[in-house]
Amino acid sequence: MMREIGISFIILGLLASCGNRNETAEQPESNQAIEEVRVMNAKETIETVCYVCHSPTAAPDNRLAPPLEIAKRNYLAETSTRAEFVDAMVEFILRPTEEQSMLHSDVEQFGLMDPLGLSEEEIQAIAEYIYDTKLEKPDWLVDQ
Image (cartoon, rainbow, N blue to C red):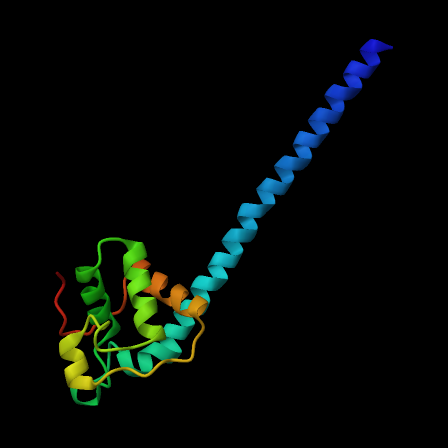
């Protein structure tokens, strides 16, 4: 009888651990799917919203703002980490001011950008995408 009880506890323990493994195995896949959607939404927003002004292909006399690659380079030069880059970009895009701008000569040339009306979460996803992605650059821009 004691042997049967011991075996039952072992079986219950194994079943419980198998159940936990399935739950943890599903969680990363779910997080990965959410992250993929977030990245795709950020990419789409950049292409449909940001590139209206920050287009890498706009002619110099039709440009409303510097190409996004130029903005990225300026933010990279002024920040040390991904978190600093993202925080600085989010703060500026949410509340654009000349003091927060990392593109001072471009603000002089094009003026200060208007707030975009996007949520902080959307802007954070965009800033992370910009940091993590090799952006299209204008033909005239040389690599550094």
